[in-house]
Image 1 (cartoon, helix red, strand yellow):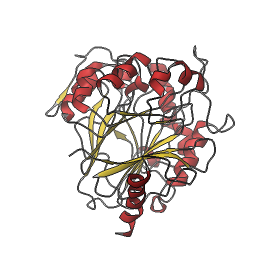
Image 2: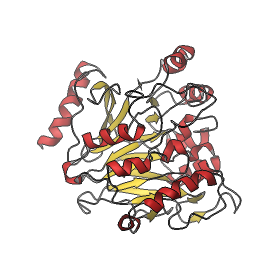
Image 3: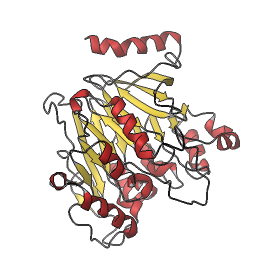
Length: 381
């Protein structure tokens, strides 16, 4: 009861005194038993999302690093500074919030697909915080020529070969249709209303009854091969699909298989053009959308797509980890409507899954102070 009151008090104060800024400048409190935490960690150089399940089971999805790229577009400012590598940023953040019962290890690490902004810091992260289980779409056979990004896959497999043999035995192939691969490790029966359901990987989609191949055996671009899953806790639902959302052959059948409105999602493919299209969004209608961005350009997030979503779904709340100041000025009509911007984005679901908060944390140092907070929001039944 004390744990629950710990999170209800800030929620009550928000209702009384305003929607945000109630605890600005103070550190975010640690995870507590019964809560579900979802952290979009901002290094400005790659995508990384850290989860703490209600029983303390921990998971990281992707750990990217674009530092080696010489892109056509300039990069957003690195956080907290250019001297800290993305793997260091991820590791320090995770250590700060990792429950004691984790004993310094992550229960799961999932690589959604083999693009460097999603996986190229995974080896360094593993050296700093060991993984109990590594999950990808290919294990144990990485020779499939169906996928386009073979050079990136070779880079990834070199890491897998260096992975300790004892851990390689604990690797998993992400299989669409399964709900028994990502499970509670500390109290397996403690939260029967918690589940992680796999929906797509390698271009194969679970349609609710069986696995289908929307590509009909043809070659799959790397984004479309991303691992996609729905995490549910009580009434709360969170969806993440790597970069698969840039291809309606995967995003739309997954949405149809989910078949209901959800509470939150990671923006498909950094909210690029041709993502989060109408039929998909008409089904999912997430209340919260979190976008991780790394470049100063108007295509990730794509401004016409943002304008369409803001117009069609006025209740949808958008959060961005890193939008450069020049982009904010150039598209004030879009970014002035963002709920939170430039920081680590945290969704904290209260015990039972009926309510949740959203926090933006300061990413300029390693204190993780709250910049703003929003909620409480009621999960959709």
